[in-house]
Length: 320
Image (cartoon, rainbow, N blue to C red; front, side, top):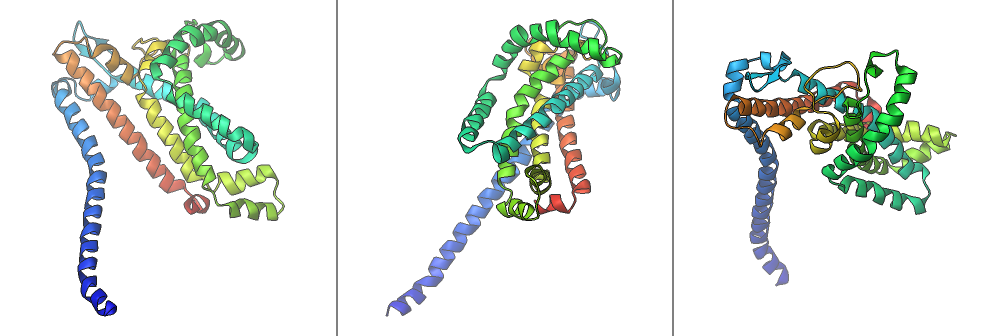
């Protein structure tokens, strides 16, 4: 009797289960597509706000170095230069430090030290950017001006990158503050990636007589290469869009200079500085166009990173 009752009710139960699966699948699809829709909406809104500037300046907006609201002459090249250079400086500083910290937390540090270090890294990620900016302008910049920058100029002054007057607020200071802000992101993601490496990878390397460094380099870092690259791209995305802390230490001068000691400007900084005080007109539309350029650079960098990863990932990376 029980078996017959079960057979009679099974089709209905299976049908309800099928409906629930379809509803769940549809909801998840909508959530995923909403991310794409949000990017499209943001891009369309920026394009709508910058349409008059796009028609007036055209492609010259990307190559011109003029930013003169009085004479209504606008160009984005100093801000593009500042955004790219400060982000590259931040990556040069942050990537080795972050990956080394992640390796230490997962492979080298004793168990009793790993959790406190991880906690402090997460706390650094929680510090608001404006607080880091205040620390940067009152503590970091004076120290850089009085100690680090003169030392760099004395040792590497033959290079154009380290020539010229030292102001403190500079492109290099902006890159350093961005590096401080992206270290927790890259470290946290890299740590999770390294923890996901199967223990069998390490055990196989040790069984072949590898040293700890060889195990870390060959069995761990090579296996986790794809994930580590993704962590770097996340950090780069944060670096490209960072605003307040950079605005407070980079100098905010719209010019292109070879020296890293010279002040600079970024796309996000100029929008933050001028957007709220700009009346409707071509100046405001040029700021909208700067936002559109920043969005385009971010999407382009991520797309290129995906292509590079697909082109150069070897068997070890594919395995991860």
